[in-house]
Amino acid sequence: MRVRFANGVATARPASLIVNGSTAQTPSFEGTGAWTTWVTKTLTVTLNAGGNTIRFKPTTASGLPNIDHLDVTTP
Image (tube, rainbow, N blue to C red; front, side, top):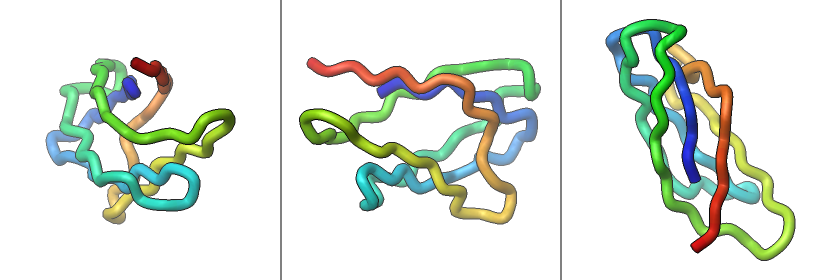
């Protein structure tokens, strides 16, 4: 799974990646230099056949970065 995001502050913004109600991992979204500077992070998760619910939940009071695209591919 690829997540496109922007984080205009120098401090990373960690999050819980929740897949179908369970935390799959806790990625950290590093600063990108500006809120309009987008980068892509690749994350590996296990999905069920058919529909899945994917959610990011911030783990700090700073919140999440701006996330504008989620691309899911299968091998």
